[in-house]
Amino acid sequence: MRANPGDFLIIASSHLEQPPRVGFIEEVHGEDGSPPYTVKWEEDGRTTLVFPGVDAHIEHPGR
Image (cartoon, rainbow, N blue to C red; front, side, top):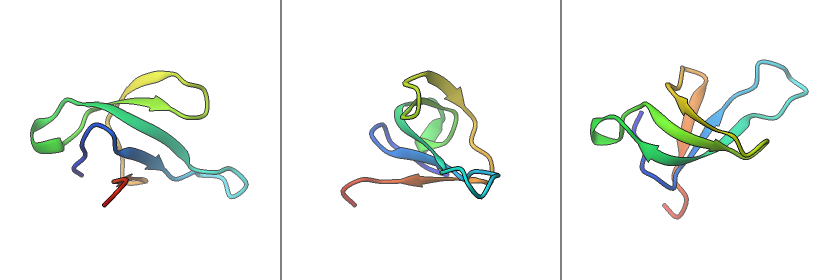
């Protein structure tokens, strides 16, 4: 998984009736865009350090 600041981290929900979690990647701490990422979550505005799992993907706006 590779990301840049400004990309979005999308984490799939484990419940059918819930939407995926969407977060704005503010910082990339790994080499060459690898995790962990500092992410600001759209749902509540909290900022957390994230090590994404297999249920996550990156969206690159404008590409």
